[in-house]
Length: 333
Image (tube, helix red, strand yellow):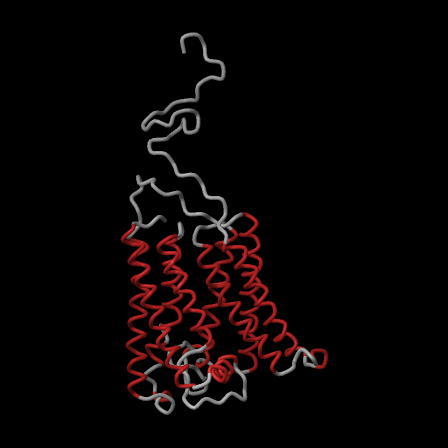
């Protein structure tokens, strides 16, 4: 999917708008915290973290800021710009949609002022509109089929696709397994765990934790399947999944180090050991997929207009068809 110049610029502007929205909320939280380290400890999930004002963001918003910045650059320069815009739009819709019914809930009154919640709801609508616009831009901004000024979008290499399939598939399966375990232990939290409610803590602009984990699992499995078949969209979807895995795994490792779980790993219950190992696995899987998919595979050469049966046999002229010439042409050929 090769985009026109106008579609590329439009996609870059939309990604920049999304990046500015997230950056504005991050600046608000950093200013309210008066201490970046304290905000980091809150984001990391330290139980002893105390904030003077409730943050509106989580660490995943930092990851989204990186995704939007990279997507803006890819929209202008990458051969997979169309797939990158679609992936960015899909992940935006997925993480911002729950804000429509959660931001205005009464449980947010005690933590956030009315003016802040109004601003958050407005940003949610703008983000959703931008996400839809990204998908429309990618679909409507394709070059005409006869435009061969650019090469075809590069697919993942065969080895890279297999590595991404194994890592992302395993990460998706692990995420689903933990969600099943969560349902078995804390069944009273449902459906608030996925849709939001009084029994679940969440930040102002972010989705409920169960909703986000479901999105991450589906994203990993979709990207893994796409990578196995070396689809063009496998790279942007896989890279976004890898960044989210890397961010979540890094937070898990940070908690394990902070609470000295590594020093007493052998004495921990089996479930806690698995939690520690999951953090390291997510870091490993995310890093490996990033390295595997960041570099595109060999791109197919652009087709020549009018080539048909005789392509590659000395018929580069448009509209010339027929069998290849014999290896030993007869006299008068």
